[in-house]
Amino acid sequence: MDTAAFVVAGYLCGSLTWGYWLVRIFRGEDVRTKGSGNVGATNVWRVYGPKLGLPAALLDTAKGFAPAFAATVVVGHGSGVLAGAAAMLGHWRPIFLGFQKGGKMVATAGGAFLGVAPLVGAAGAGVWILVFALTRYASVASVTAAGSLAFWAWLFGYPWPVIAFGGAAGVAVAFLHRANIARLARGEESRFELRRRRSDATRAASP
Image (cartoon, rainbow, N blue to C red):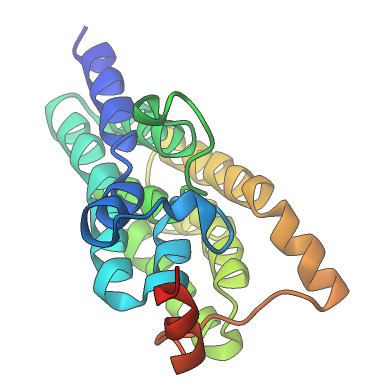
């Protein structure tokens, strides 16, 4: 019963579309009509810069962390994994957007692993930062970091549900980035800028 409640709570937390709401509140715009059309923190950061992108990233991480951590503490790793997976599902298909396309689950997955298996979450974040620093491709960093989660879970001796969760998360993130992977293969993927260029800021501010 506790696990079922945590799964429901995880999905509802994951459905909190912070990127969409922050842009609506502070810019009066629909982020789904900007950039890649994604409501996740990466698209928010690309279009509006760190003032909205950073809060979106932190909140997307927190909504994965909170239910996964609570479920792990109260019930155990198995429940934490299910709650974290539900949060990722909610981020991808949020109920508050009518189950329409949400984000690609990267920050929410990171938060879920920080809640269930902090060492795995920290190692995955380290991989993301390293790969991003070397390539400036957020998509490459995301797919590589997610793909490493099962390895870190095994290396640090976490139980099998966490290892399986790492493998499933890696596959899910890669699947949601399949268009990015195709653009990378064609040499068309855009490198990520931590700060918007002046011309980008001007275009975003134009009606």
